[in-house]
Length: 125
Image 1 (cartoon, rainbow, N blue to C red):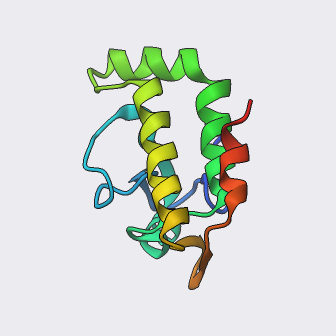
Image 2: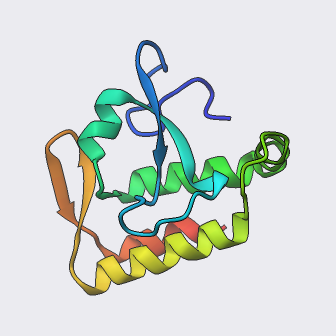
């Protein structure tokens, strides 16, 4: 569902890769399948427990919307907890809290910046 690409750098997933909690576990400890993404180990380790910047958020929302049925079927078949609506509501909540706190988001390796109000447009579809 990610077209064989890392959600963060958009390069082909080759070599070492990891399953990442898009909304970090440290921010909201829930293992909902729609929150899982595949990333290069380097990208995931650089992101650490930061929220991802708006371009990554947009890619996550698009992936979940575009492949909603397939994701649901795969997650159920793998007996993984999944709830698309809850995953989206959790993401909206944590991004809203981060904006209110003037918090930073992860852009790429060693690059952080303050979250702006544009994040909410990622959910307007």
